[in-house]
Length: 354
Image 1 (cartoon, rainbow, N blue to C red):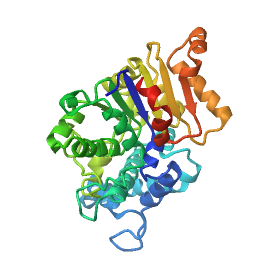
Image 2: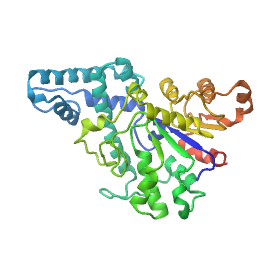
Image 3: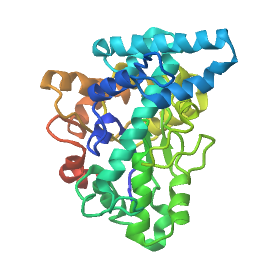
Image 4: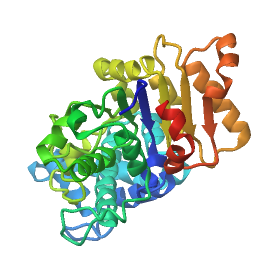
């Protein structure tokens, strides 16, 4: 249980520690998946055939020539994505720059397909045995979710389990559901409670995904299509892909945006885990006003010292500190470019919990 109101901002680097692909690897995977080509046969010889099936269903390929032409236009958009990916900062940035509904639709299908595969690989990494619904806790020991869970439970007795997530919010910039899934497992195993109890705790907590997620976990309260974590099921791929949002689409959701900015505005401390500090994401987090945030601790592994100084200045601007406050809180705004997410809890654990 945390004493201070704490918001965790979770980025792709956090999922990377669990075995998810880097941004570069994800670009390559998406490029390969949407490069759908035929060689005179009904099944594609290149690309992800499940994306092809989802696209056929969406475009109602068999209805007539107009529908077949629409299908082909999507294929061309997929070829464009595949060819341009080496130039792109990220798939999200590329989609935003293109301003094309065809590119957006194909990119979402590619993202959803690749992330379903990544969740499957992540689950296999920590699974007790093939086809087992159990987690191998010895394999799961050295990762940031376990480290976070240890900090979460340090002061929380089973009789106070309903307070487990009090003072905590999550803003998750990833499409995967690994945090919710594994915390759900951790609660059941550590406190020896049933799935319904763990589900209720998490459903009552604040897990915000600014750019959506690839469907909901079966026990989550949501209108999104249901998808088991690690199941690899792509039967509803098109519907699942529509759960993913672009930057512009998220901005149109005023209620969600308000909740995200409230999570920043109302926090006593902000903890950034594996976050890239991209301009669009920083703008999304920026509230119209914010309280005098007491502490910011962030991982910035691999970022150069000059860039670290720039980002540190951006974080202080995010919290709208004046020059006097910036000087007085200089030691409370930490951007550590030598550690990964797991190490943050070991190095700054007492500071976070104070």
